[in-house]
Length: 572
Figure (tube, rainbow, N blue to C red):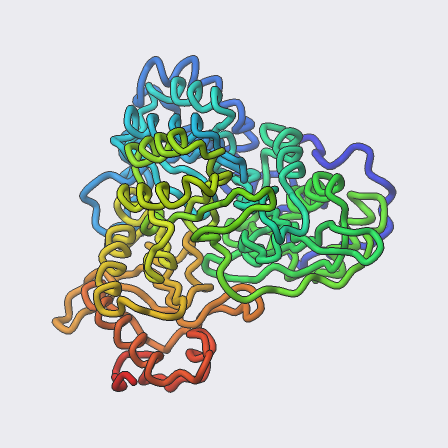
């Protein structure tokens, strides 16, 4: 295997920590694959599968697909086989992957923080209508996610995406996953700096680049110049966060090593200042460290967060500067973290006098038809375009004040309100057992039903309470950093039967009070009992809170019986 590190590296000036046992790190000469995933990537660069899809698989059909491509390299094209219907959550962990496979695909389409034109929104919607049984969900990675995709239709889908400047390349796999960008980049009045040019340049240089197509595992990127830090920078592998140097002006700090799943870690801050035009170089340096020094032996330790935790952030910065950048970074205290909403829901004035409008589908569930209807409204009211958000929402950019009220009313009519309840605004859910082969429980429908019930029981909730619903332990919906983080699993009900349910994380947060939710010992909730449980805990909070006390702050001081829902206080 060739050495893929930069060929023009400066001489090494720092000692790089070596683990006590071999971890499959390329930089130390451990290039022999240690698991089937690494062997598959060594056998053939996953980017090569695109040609086979176009020339062979799309013409000969599902049965012609090589299993190594089907369950491996297809992911670099944004394609996963979806879950075969009728397989309950109790069998998720016991069946082989091929037994869970359906003959249809999930497809993720990257947006990478792009401003989607009305034509792009329409194309995304029409693809859902024509090829995906009208599915098209907004994910918390700013993707559009389809289901029921047939391999025969993939070439035409790619052609339609390409026509509006979009694609699915490296939307999955051990690759640079879709980037998160500020949904209000370039238009927000309080923006520190617009990171859009950096995202565009990273995509141009490195997406589809074989020097960066084989990481130990996924690599997640976020860039924001907005003071709300609206891209969940604490939970990404690398984040560039807007900051201001007293002499050099606006730029970015760099945060590394964030990630959730079964071993959650918050990103560590380098405490630096870099200018906009150096963001792509620093990105490639961080990505290069992960590629060269990341742990490839065990998939469970193959994320950047483990390397950062083992090295420490000071050593990580030292290696980045000496081995990959060849220069010292400017030191600057990291920007303060904010408190409050980061989703941009509602109406906000832009710096040019127009408005941006954040709208809220329930738990990211939209459809192809709904996106086409949205495109119709964008055209009718002369809206510049839309961006997806890291909270399964959309933000419309460039709305003229003269049409604002009429547009808001029309959005309400199609179910994309800019005036949602706190519950609808603050609930996210992953794909769940409906389509995902890793899931154990239903999520999208359960989250929607929960929102409906909470709106009925608490119609005038006066404070934000976030609910993130996940179908398995992998935390795709950021379970650990929500007020109610619901991790799907099978639980035993009062009759002794095994049923769908959740482990509960309470009081998680990002921002100024960043922490992982409190887990109560042996505490599980059935899916059927979820409405009553959440209602009881919310009622206890409303009765017991002090003036101005947020839900997460209350959780960390409240008695366990109030959090378990075993005791219900009378509302004030």
